[in-house]
Image 1 (cartoon, helix red, strand yellow):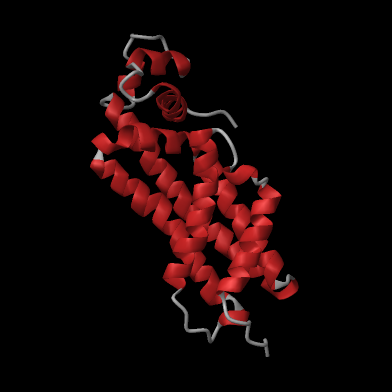
Image 2 (spheres, rainbow, N blue to C red):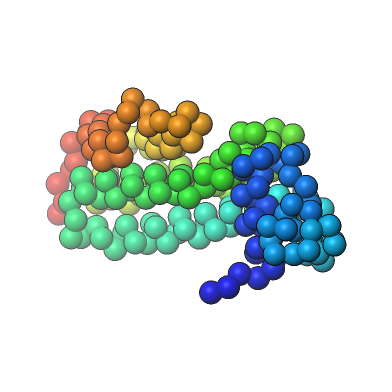
Length: 205
């Protein structure tokens, strides 16, 4: 499916912002990367400014994240009856790693440029990061093994979700895997730690 001109502008702008930085990327460069005549003003038929392109990219990623989280929770709920808890935990961890990796361009823009745009930092926090942590809380509370457990799910989500985010951020910023741990190693350790943080599961009736 071909992208619209607007979608191309948003996608290419985010890629350039990630590679070069927001300030170092010109409107003409975005136009050229989007298949428009550089310097001819084609971007302004869709956006008022370069900032508006950045804001659109971040808001659209936030909206997509909310939809993805809802879809992932539905998918995970559908597999509960036939899959043991360890495999479900591994699926949650892998889904989180995939999501953070998907947002690698936005991550680079966030750390390099967004401090000058606090309103966009809030969008990232509330639209991308918080939904991921909320999803972990919702998922644990929905598991039949833990339906009666009175635990600090928010704190547990911060520990487990934070480790997933850190694993990919370390790779993005340092260029190596943390501790040189491969993804399968990380997932296996994450599952063991997740099980260790929780009480023995209650029997499912």
